[in-house]
Amino acid sequence: MKPLIGLVFWVCSMGWVNTAGADSLDDIERKKAQVVYNLALFVSWPAERFATSDSLFHVCLLGSTSEGLRSALSELAAHKSVKGHPIQYQTIETASTAVALETPCHIVFIGQQLNADLSPLLTTLHEQITLTISDRKDFAEHGGIIGLLQVDQRVRFGINLDAADQAKLTIRAQLLVMSGTSLLGKKARHLPR
Figure: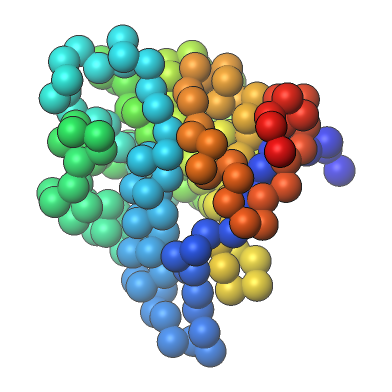
């Protein structure tokens, strides 16, 4: 198993719970979209990433994702903002399109079905100061910033602090010190306990 460099696992208080089949797939996807939105509130992008104080906040879905997730993110984009920035949501089918956008995405959610070599994609996205999130297996361990995991009917996050640092993103301490968090890796050793 690859070392868990700079990973933090945190139990989400929202739950992403599927109790005895009570949540439909669409319900789970709506909760996942809400988690993505809430995570954006705990991350700071450098000021130069926004042309003005009310510039759009770009959220992109890359690769095959469920219709429920696309619909839920589209609905959030219509009614929410991130730190005063209106959300613009878009779906992107290929990795080459994602890295070639005139205005890079602030968040890219990478679908499980994307058939692309993640390493060069993540490197380019992080150079563009992009928060990468996915529910792909071992995403944060393989260089993504935030991996969503469903464990014991709850969402847990793998947060790769080294990847966040490479992308020049700051993750707020509140996210890192919540109950259930274990700090691992080179960057995590320097955080106060």
